[in-house]
Image (cartoon, rainbow, N blue to C red; front, side):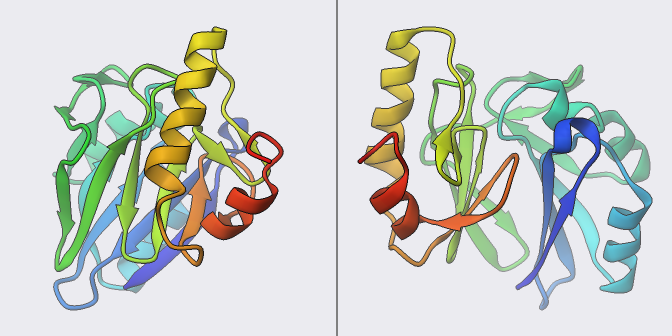
Length: 186
């Protein structure tokens, strides 16, 4: 598996590339902006961007989606059919996404937004603004906050401790660290 992290200027959001070494297909997680260094990374690893996974429909995760579509013929997947002003394919709990020979599973963690989804790949999970290193995403009400925490406990903390957590902002972590030390859960 080929992997890259990009810290973007839009609200210091993270974007990630996952590439399949066998097929040369690539997946972009979140698209705050389309940057030349993302394109350069794809070209240097001879990867073709085939899909985009949007964790939730906030501008700092979707504003570059139209530019991605101008760059390539990728399919976009999100928890809502309109993301960043673009039509995308809706996915939800339990749906399977493939990037070449890499298989991922979608899990829904509503709370930060009603359409918040995460993507679980072998050894890693992309959590958007649901789970951060040492924190969780802000919510609009106490019931949404409880729903978010329950989703994280039930669907993310059931993953093995060594799974890497790649959030929409800030540094990466692991499931084990977040389960044991995240102040929202201890």
